[in-house]
Image (cartoon, rainbow, N blue to C red; front, side):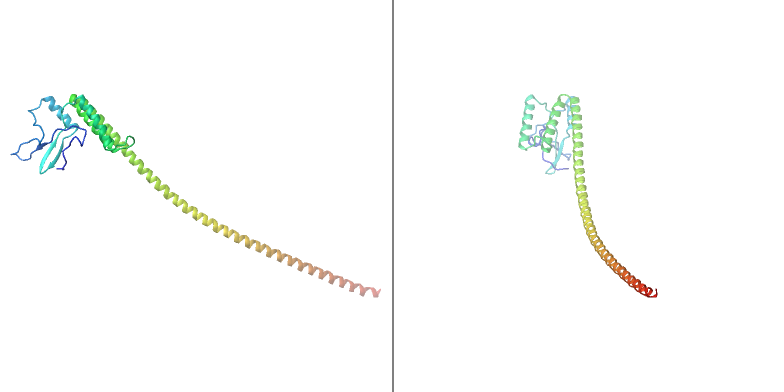
Length: 243
């Protein structure tokens, strides 16, 4: 049995009856806890049905204390107009005491409004059980919808975190790739400059060789022309005396 403290008015906005001792030994009888009023005789059929509906909507609380098992059921006492006013004042007071946020997601505000709605369901159920069961369906549907939104919110947060990590990882990979490409570009630019310098050196060397070759060719041509002129003069000197 899970050990729990009895529910008091300071713990919840839902009204509960006083705790009742549940005995597990045959010689003991069920007795109300100190301060609890003794239960009257067998309730009427309508009251029994109302209590069953209340117990189905808000199950009784059980806990163990000093080896004894206690139970505490939701109250079946009808609410008056003053009770509703007090409930509203208690809700506002609890919201201020626990510093609940007025907007946004706030577990404290949600818990207090849930307790207030449960108390309203209790009050309505006492007057009309069918209306209470309908409100129970509305409460459960709202709770399921809220849990679905909460799951969706957590999933979206996880999805956003994964996308952020993936983008950071992708950014790091792109930065590495950019650095590698810049290094390759620098190496290619250096290689291009070296090839350009070699090309210029080869062009200058080829120009120098071409100029030297042309000079040598002109010198040989001049030498041949001079030799040809000398040979021609000598030939003319030999032929002239014979005439």
